[in-house]
Image (cartoon, rainbow, N blue to C red; front, side, top):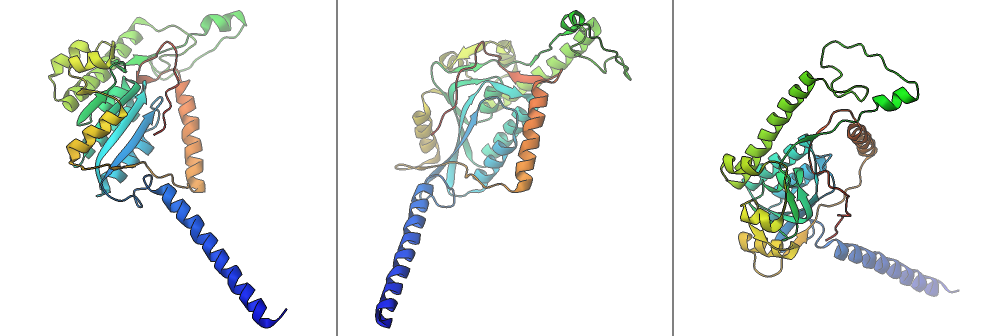
Length: 305
């Protein structure tokens, strides 16, 4: 083969490789448009999904902070599909939504379920949109204890406890609660319940007494919640987008921006694994206070938009 022919083939091969690389890069960029805040163009609506039991607030809070700083995002839309969860995580997300709405409008869109802690978070938004049949409300606090004393007795197992104070093993599955313990826990529940009531009243700009009157754990439909002032508008996810456009003054079709999926470092993987382990332990711990609706059967509520 002559030198000229080899040179020609080499050039053709290089051109083909460069073209292939550029083509793949273009495909990746196109796929990212509308998903990545850094790539999307025009007016943008940031969409954050909150699905399933609320056990950890870190990701949601980080997403809120990220969208709040992005000047291209005109309004933030929370898509909530959750029966609630832990008091601490719910309060942390609520606080960040309240902080965010002082600088950028936040709309909450309720899916199948947005109860207890799910509603707690939604109440912090500027506006709430729910389906007529959305299960919401359940403004209340719950603590659950498992008793295995009789089971252990049947298999011949007993337990001795040495403690530093009368209430140190409160909620132990190995014995019943005493009357003093029940009173102490009821006072604790009442305090956390009042925090819930005040948070909803503040977020919805409603009288505390009105919220207290319906804060008995009752489940409401989206339509009932609207009549009570807990929801602003009936509609689906698309209706929430239209409301977000109107509030932000967006003309035409906006770009929906979802939180970017970052590749975590080894430390992130270790942290996430530890967090999941702690979460599992907490779910089976003797004492856990929750803004949670323990629905009779857990429906599949995972959604993708």
